[in-house]
Length: 124
Length: 260
Image 1: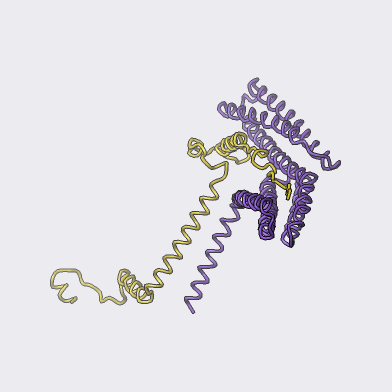
Image 2: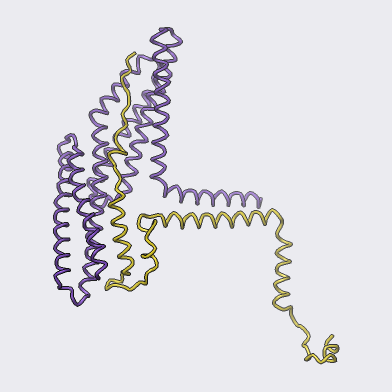
């Protein structure tokens, strides 16, 4: 094969001592594929899905704080110069925004949590 | 064997994920439990009223037994309703920053625990009742407790929750004031009349708010010391004054942020 290559004017090739990266990858894939049964593939896919869903769920829940939920986009995308105590200006703006949200979203505790009235006059 | 391990792994993963999510939703869960028990209460009340009417009309042993069973279920449901109600009050109280007044926080929690214990014991007594005649005294016992203790504990818990939330808001106001002041101090014109007026306005708001929240706290403390009936209206008026001032402060923060 090398001789043929030389005759054809192609630079001489060295005898391959070990498989190239693509061949190695192929070998690994074949080995992994022979190890994985259909059931294992499904199981691994399910594990992967559960991890993704849990991760996304956690991110979603952690972002739903009053400070971040529906925060104005202008505050989110601003550049972040810092103050003396290393608090970004945008953080300060967010704090002020969160503060005003807490005031407006006040719960009416007395209305929502008043003691339920029940009938206890069992006049038999 | 590997399948068993895989199953156990899944189970563990599911439990970990669900416990994390449920911890975050304690408040929602307590609120839903309370709503569910309230719906159950309404249904049981309807059954109780029907069975009572039937017994009064027919006066038979069968109708009496039915009235007993339905009334017992109804009373048990009343207890369940109050248990979930106190659980909801406790969850909401715990969601506030108790460090603003730990004594008040713990005292309120103890009172809620005490009422929960009473209701739990009462529920056991109702469950152990064997005939219709035992039920009206048990209902009276609960009624008296409601009028003497439960109503007051409930109002106190609401007042303390409101107080802790407002105190937390006031702390936040102080933090933001300091941060904005730091920004102003960096400016060359920090001594200008605009900033001086802003500062004095904030000082007035702070002093007035501190005074109002102290009034609310004194009212709550007096109730705890003298075991008097709590007047939530009075507390609410003081706390609302603080909130009104905080709303004004919020506008001042936004205004000054446009300048600096």
